[in-house]
Image 1: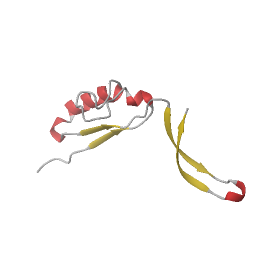
Image 2: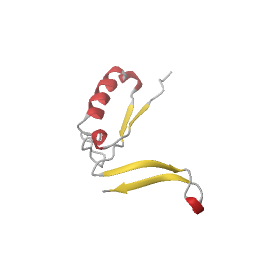
Image 3: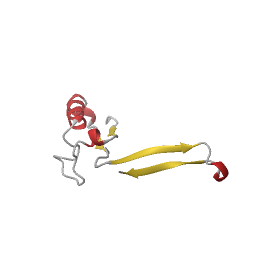
Image 4: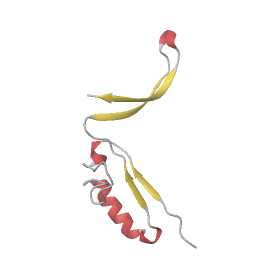
Length: 86
């Protein structure tokens, strides 16, 4: 029986991004930070399961934040995801 292949997602800010590449370059797809280090350690320890690692850190003065506003006066309630640029 084949083991279940796990996907491990790194999601966060520029620290998570770690200067990762935006293409399929296998040498830079996880960046140069903690995501790369942890993926190397877990990849070794869980090699039999062939884990798949994804880095979706966001760098470059961009932030994605979940926004839920209870009341907007006459406009009522609103929820969603907003992107802010500095």
